[in-house]
Length: 165
Image (tube, rainbow, N blue to C red):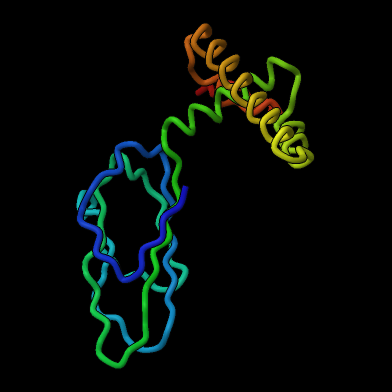
């Protein structure tokens, strides 16, 4: 998911429904100065004025964050955009279950992508939607049966090994 804010104050908050990492990218437009508008992570005593292509990556569900008001002086056409990119926990769970369900049915995510790209018309889209729902349900059942855990996160294309000290 993504959201875009323009010259906007965002009170300090937590995004409790977000999955692990949030990425925020700031961009500037127009001409002239922008006063204020710092971004802050108070738990770290951190605040900074984002410039164009400043990037912040953090856990928005567990780290309080927010943006102070900015002032655009009269005659200035300047603006600051903050573009946030994040996943919600239910979406992340569905992605994990889709992967498990696809693996259980000897399908790769590339197979699913290709099938979706080739789906024609409403009937084709409905068939892909039905397949996706069935694979997620299959993956969810398998995930619950296995007790969850790290195996669900492991990409089959990577050779995983346990860390030893």
